[in-house]
Length: 415
Image 1 (tube, rainbow, N blue to C red):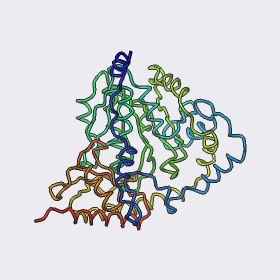
Image 2 (image 1 turned 180 degrees about the vertical axis):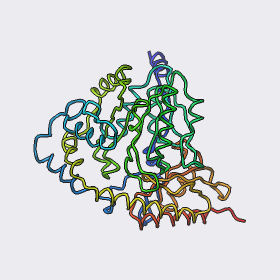
Image 3 (image 1 turned 45 degrees about the vertical axis):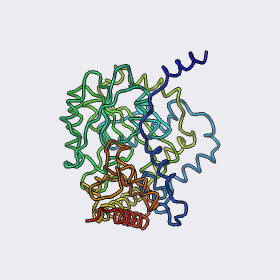
Image 4 (image 1 turned 30 degrees about the vertical axis):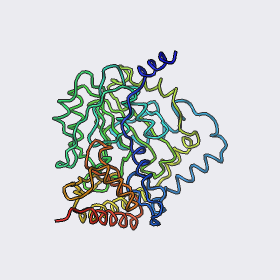
């Protein structure tokens, strides 16, 4: 009996999932030197909410308090989300589109990671593959591994501002490719695509018969030369599934409210039953908290442009500090000044360092010696690169990057 059980376990054992941001950051935190009395500098993940300068809008706080005190939102919500919240999100997103979305186009999720899991599950099928950017956000890969969905990586080109290598996409795609993921503004690159490049992406997707997943968690957090434009403006070219959330733009990742939005003027998603599959799976997964859903209309309607402008200006200042200070560290190279989102990615030159084996070793030793956390690029598909998140209080950011420079000087190869 025991042998039979062992054989059964062996046959059913799932493959070890790829690394995720959380798993890597948790491991790095375990390497901190507890005797170091300096504050830990968290340059590894995009959660600025613990810093007073990045506090969310008063309108958002008031909306949550009002929703709780109403005593009307302590119940279960409908499986697809409160209709008022879905209508509100549809109207909010429609402002940037050439056509109007409806509540039926919006599905609420418990944050963006939950939205990724839903999309991957709904699209997975035997023998299928999905195209992911390299570098990219590793949760897609982790979810695909659990769903036995093959992952194929297309390159983002640093010499072209991290644009998509569309020629590479054409080589990778086949009749088993279910979707292509585009992250804009870019995580981890800090890039913002031009309108022209986005149109080329959608035209390529149409030619190849691909569904586009537009990850726009950092929507409107653009502060460089390129304005943010939602991929859904090209929904008439190819169907778009947009993924978004309150987390980044409103600085509230702990509120766990995200969405999946279908933009499909030609009805392709309905005909292919993608919408039906999404609805079916969402009905058996966890819902976002009802009171947060109830607060959404107030949050979207009452948050002023002054708040968004303040956040963009703070991120621009932080991005400039990060880029300028990184240039003072010889062992890293930042291809471009960040223009969006909350992070940038830098190439690590190991030839200038002693006793550092790779990017993970760099990050482990940096955490231990300097109490600074950065994310190794291998977690995002680029070995010997580093993702540096700059959405922290400016003086702490400068202190953290100075510690990275000190770390370099300590490990610099002797001439």
